[in-house]
Amino acid sequence: MRKVLNYLAVIIGCELIALSFVLLILPNKVLSFGIDGVGALLYYTNGVNPGINILVLNAVFILISLLVLDIDEVKKYILPSLLIPVLIMVNMILLKNVVIELPELVVSILVSSFLIGFGYSLIYKNGHGAGNIFLIEETIGEVTKFRSKAYSWILDILILIVLFITNGYMSVIYSLIIIFASKYLITKARFGINDSKIFYVITSKEKEVKDFIIRHMKYELTVLDVKGGYSQKKNQILLAVINSKDYFKLKEGIKTIDPDAFIAITDTYESMNIKTF
Image (cartoon, rainbow, N blue to C red; front, side, top):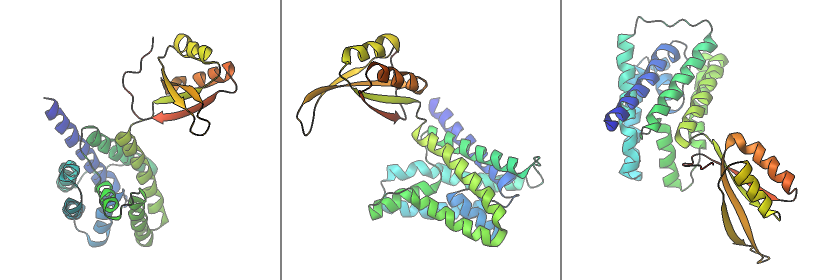
């Protein structure tokens, strides 16, 4: 049953992306990111159904990726890569007489950004990959041994330059909003939201700080025995994982107890079983 629900969520995510594409992006002659953006740009110039453009490009890049990456890494992209362009083609036929009129163009842009970002989020959260530009990033990184997020932005910049030449600067501005907003939502879906913090504390007032974390803040902590790399001096690090909402309270509390305490704070994108009392 769970597997069925996962596939259903993926299908819904793909349909949201397709609907945004057909009802909001294409009528306003703007672009989304990556391969979808290339497919739309080709449609504006050659008139070929963007679903066909995207399907062909996705198929080519998946085949190339299979030559470089492990098949388990590639196969999670296959279903969305086929389903999204097919749904775009189907929706263009079924909804050819449907016109969405929102009060302002910017509202259309924001709605399309949300639908794309939310659609991809559903896909990622259910174990699939989408947006073959991320697969291309991994493929190029594997070949060059230099992994970078810049590859996707290079492609986006290139298609935006062409869009500027053909449609003018306003289309580019609106397209940038879609690209930034949808990529932000996708990144949060892929890597999570940093809803918790890790505190590393070295203090001369260890007992008081421990008492503050456990009794006042109601969090558990771990004590790590460490030794300085240069001084060889033995010391202890207090480690606590807390909810982000308590970040300021804990930081200021430790500084009040020991103004000279060493505190290192990092984001954690996922934590399970944070224990409070």
